[in-house]
Image (cartoon, rainbow, N blue to C red; front, top):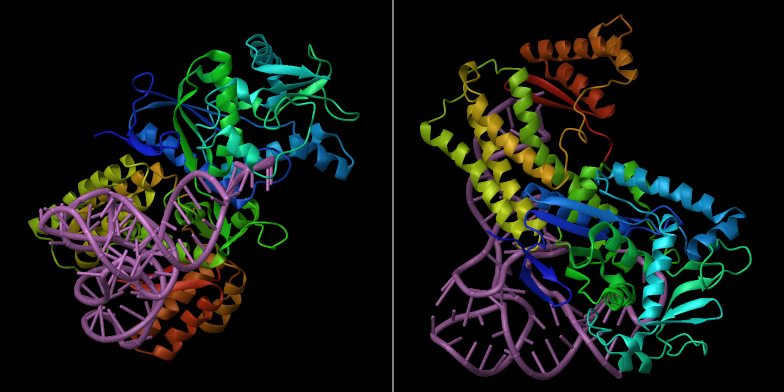
Length: 502
RNA sequence: GGCGACGUCGCCAAGUGGUAAGGCAGGGGCCUGCAAAGCCCUUAUCCCCGGUUCGAAUCCGGGCGUCGCCUCCA
């Protein structure tokens, strides 16, 4: 069983063989911290979080490096708009980025270097490039000479001549070639700047990834990831810089994620469909956002919308059902006996867990096919639900160990996808104070404790049902439903869960 | 103009040579006092045309359509 990955450089799926057995050296382009990250950024970071988690699950020791671009034109522009220091803007959104990633349950990188803390190393790489005659100095700027690197264009499938015939290249007659890009930019007044052999200035954007990856992972590391809009020019330029400077291949496998659209259009502020991750997470649990994104292969385009979030919410409920149903049955053993499970039924349960795990791994091994992996989990859900429906946990809970095993497989594999069923779905009941009024009205309750009031209501409903007084029973249920609770009559009695509006 | 991707059930979406996963929605049934949840059953031959093959959604050619990149972009 080997893992296969789609490599942008070769445009094919290849067997994944690491530089060092058992160890993955992985770099993913991080954010430019000039604003809160949007939902499209989130997709990319989520994609590589899942890849990283899966590789770890498959036994690799994953060293995961992700930069923070904290000096850049956009940060400077934002700071100027808000009349404050670029470093302050960068600090604010660096913090916001970390919080957002944490909220989305994206694991922290092994190392997360900042551009501003890597300036000396960047200067050193520029010097190497100048020495090797791949870069040249003009008035305090340093440019990379695209024509000096024969492989330029190999990642994005372009050649320099085609690119130049394309209409839009910036006009700057100080550059030897219009496609040459800046390694170092001389500082303009008011901009952040650092001393260098070429005068005060700041690094070009592409440089930091080359420098940081080499520092943290060495050359020819295993995986370089990012969204597909970075293929050209960013990653192309990284390859040029790194390979020109080291004479070694830069990266073994290039992985690129598909772009996200919102309401079937490219996300942009002018279209009014610009969604920030933090705003989405105010309305939907991280697990639902993750599930929605993981139902599409990472390289495909993904259309994001609240309708789809609502659908994903229901799919998520389905994944959680066996977990909560088993927990409920264990805490509240059924009053009546259910049908005993045959050996064959028990065997089916055992097999389903193994089958799900196998199918999950098979799908994920094939270029991280999360949609296929989820299908395997939904199959397991159905088997567990069917068993619980029919046999419950058995007399004296004798099926519990096997049910626990099946559910542990389910939650364990969901965890590989970073989809948490416990943390995101708090099942504890917190009753609003309106429950007390309802209990006074319908159950003759006279205290002031919400939980006791709720219990009184449920007891009154149970009594009413015993007396076949359906009107009274339904009044209680309707009252609680109006407060956002769902009442379900199970073989173990009535279960109340909070279900936020929607 | 150049480079590239995609077109699978009402919607979303896996599947890249051996006879169509899964989710959502819909229909029927079981369970329920009625519900809810769950379970069972149920809906496609894969944009069109041609070709290769014993056999194609899967390969090749053509057509139609949608989209992305080529400029900062996750």
